Image (cartoon, rainbow, N blue to C red):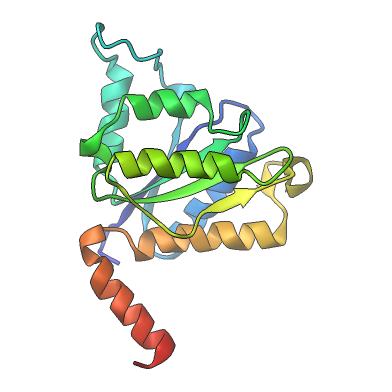
Length: 193
């Protein structure tokens, strides 16, 4: 990990009692424990109307882009809506492009009230691929949100462990140009070869 690795989490949920925001907090806590500086981007505090190519970008869009450009790794978090990711996250991503994501390490996290949010994660992975981001192989889905969260905390132990590991991986693999060196050192320490 480079000194002052900066991990930014982008929360695609606008709910006050958001499981997505709670899970992102768990991941960011793990990233901080691994030595990173972290920022939670809460889209409730941004004025981001639907993108209109004929209109100038609002000031909050430039603020969002600057925050993401300054990150060494980005964590995208979303609730699953109708088998995909949320419209607030879609709008935020529509204001961004290659400058914010190309060659950047990105983690994915999705929360669902019911079944496992596989399709939401797949859709986000496709967006990241289109932006030439380097998306971590580890992605985390939290299903059955009503029984996985309580009092603003992720209480499912297995899910919490996966979310913490995601936060650690964001720090470990931040800065794609370092990936081959970090990966070979990790493989050597695990295999002895």
